[in-house]
Length: 113
Length: 113
Image (cartoon, rainbow over all chains, first blue to last red; front, side, top):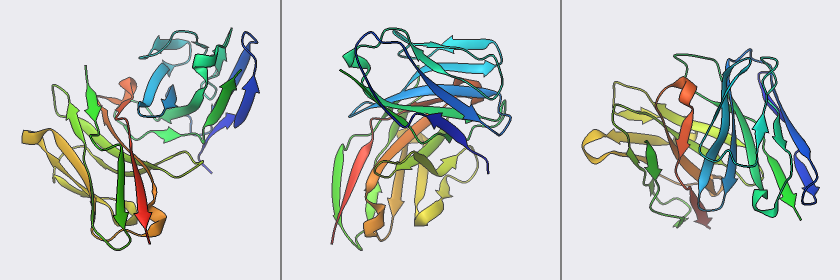
């Protein structure tokens, strides 16, 4: 089954404790992206990647890092989480140039206390 | 820069009534337009999309949307709402595949019995 898988689905952590949210897709998609969803603000793009070893900032990249060492994986790293990063996070992937339908993961609800 | 506005944060309709959710976008060229639905605790599901051609597009679950270039709008409609349609709806615009999507703030739909 074609899917985008995020882990964990729920996470509560403390300020300053580094964490990683994983994202994996099994569709051989070139493009992957991370969004955060906050009430009234919709989804805002954090980082995106157009291919292996190619990443770029989205609209709200501060406080986040990403890496794309393999095509299927695109982890989101919070080196020193803060309470304002409490949010619902979505990973998405796209097949590549000319394809514009994004596939989304189920989301990761992160709470930073 | 592209942007999307969903003027209605909350909408309540009675079951069986018609529905229209508004979406206005700002983009310099012909956009790719999408409507996504998010049920409580779920990820995003694509309802429909517009690339080009016929400005009235049909989607899943009985939804349709009409692209009006002169009004920069892409409103979502359904002739008869079901209780299971209660969810949050997001309009999104995309420039091209690699640049991913810009989302509106979302409209939360509640359905009265």
